[in-house]
Length: 502
Image (cartoon, rainbow, N blue to C red; front, side):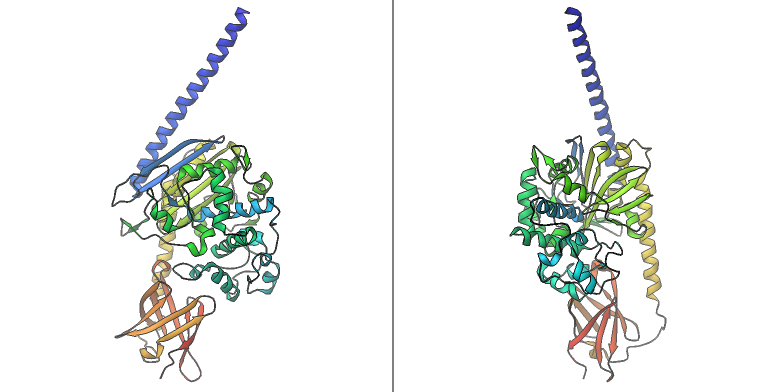
């Protein structure tokens, strides 16, 4: 009996020793991560950053670095609110999944079962488009962000206007990232649940998970005591910028949260939809969301997030990757002055979130892939340097195209009419009105919240500055009488409705 007791004591002591050694090793690991983040932030001129890491269902690292606002110097905490941008999309897909669990929706239900006024330009797509199509970016619609970015249309009005936009690709033929379609899916959640998307996500996700600090609007976030301020790099200097209110397409990217709350969302995703004994989303619905639905073409802007992948697909609210034989579920998020990343590594039951308050910072992806390699026990490499280089190449390519576009094919030309002849209102059924006015010796254009001077390019073509959307080329067309009848802005046609030339 005495020997048996001694053996038990030795085994317990041995197990405690292993636990203490693992804890010490884990502490050293987190200290190294602290140092890595602090150095990387300094090099990237990043004001603030927060990281939350979950392993085996528990948060193991939840920490803020830097400042919320360079003008106040207040520190980032685990509860500091950041706009998580398109990481919101997984919440919208999850909301649909919960309604599927309740029998109030089906993934392959037609969208017009929930939104009767929803239509697409392509008859084939209009007849067959489903909730799954909206959630997988495969409707054939190209980017339509000018419907909401800087605009004043409500979400129902945006949805009504989609019918007038020609698709860029065939229905279900190609992945094309689409914010408006995700916002439409969120609106359908409200319709199916008898409320709003915000109400549904709050009641069925935030509340049961205990995400008490999270909200849905830039207005609410700015009223919170602990919130980050968006920043950008202007000529190498970090400056604060205004919040971008995107309430009009909220289900595509409006959630604000701190990393402490986000770790609860991550833990639930890695635990088959279960949290504290409550089934938030069924394991079946989560599997559907985490299953590849359409291939994502490699190259272009996706190189800013996804390096050297064997394959890249999209599920519903998640990019799905095969990285050196390891499965990764991931989604980045960007909105003016914020860059975020959520990563799930199901193989090792680990997930993490990175939230930053600097526009499109390369450190977001660099730190993300650093952690991926660390948790998958792969060789470490300087991912931040890699993504800085990719971003520089991407910017250089854009600048080269812009420079090439600055040189007119026919220099030293002049407009075919007096400038006053171009003044008037031009309308597109989807995008609304563009107002062109004569201000002294030049033309001025106003579209939504964008206003800028029109600079002559060649003949009846001018350039307009659209702020965050860059420079837009504006081509005025004449009718058979020689009157200005149309303005085409970056391929979008606006018909003249008043202010006819005299």
